[in-house]
Image 1 (tube, one colour):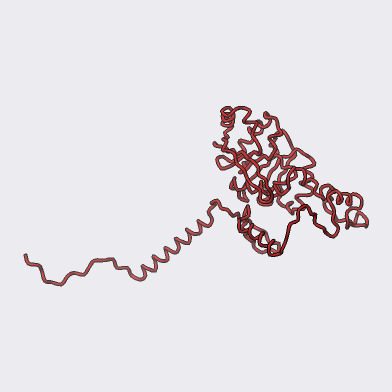
Image 2 (cartoon, rainbow, N blue to C red):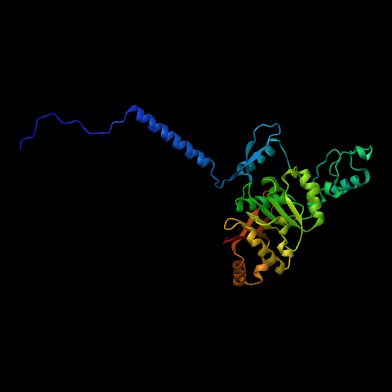
Amino acid sequence: MALSSSSPAPAKGVVITVPVLILVASAAAVFFFFLLSSLSSCDCPSALATVRVPVSDGAADVSVAERISPSMEDVEWVKDQIRINGLRMQDNVLRKGINPRTRAQQLQDLLNFKGISHNDGAESDNHTALPCPGELLVEEHHSNYGEPWAGGRDVFEFLAKSSHLRPSSRVLEIGCGTLRVGLHFIRYLQPKRYHCLERDELSLMAAFRYELPSQGLLHKRPLIVRGEDMEFSKFGSGIVYDLIYASAVFLHMPDKLVWIGLERLASKVKPHDGRIFVSHNVKFCSRLGGEECTNRLSSLGLEYLGKRTHDSLLFNHYEIWFEFRRFKA
């Protein structure tokens, strides 16, 4: 059969007009806009927490990204500033100020003379809103812990990162004392999100009459309750916490009371993601034996996750923590 000599037919294809191209491009732009908006509002974990800071003049709030712990760049910056300014630390040399005083001397000044600068007029002219005991003003309570007060920051950073806390999280501390650790949680969390059970009256006085006012944290309204015997009813019902922790508290309690506390706390920690941290040791558990301890924890819906440690930023020190979670709702 002879092939036809006629000219070839034009190739088939898809013809897209200019208006269609414009319509497709517009639809794609709208799609990507909504996609990026949904990603930006995602509640995904992040190393940075966004804190809304109110502006007093009525302007819009300002978003501030706050890291929980310093980066290596931060540490290097401090070292550079010390080097640039030619600063040298001399061992065991106290700073000599205008009127240098030890804590004991400051306290004596307050008791004898109302301090170095004070109101000599009538008491009615004294505008001190919250008169504070001299022992608190000279911060004697900062020496109650057997280690530097600054260690509280280390504990906060470790627990906050280990529990993936956000400013909207809820935290319960068992035995907050004078708020060596609690101050950092109160500052980081939204108002009323920090709760504490403390039995010691003098520690509570230090918290309410010195630490919270002096740190400008009264507006955070932490719920700090005086109580003992692991009684948590004053915190209300139906509240679940992202983090519950006890620093050097359970080791001073009889085992029976610790187990009573755990039984009451099991339903108060958020299932799966919430954490319970206990410092130093868990002899209340190890004294039962490994299998018996595991079974007893399991009966409460709790699971032991392991032993953790953290270092200190400012001094040679670390603490041991034991981590638990609630494995069922």
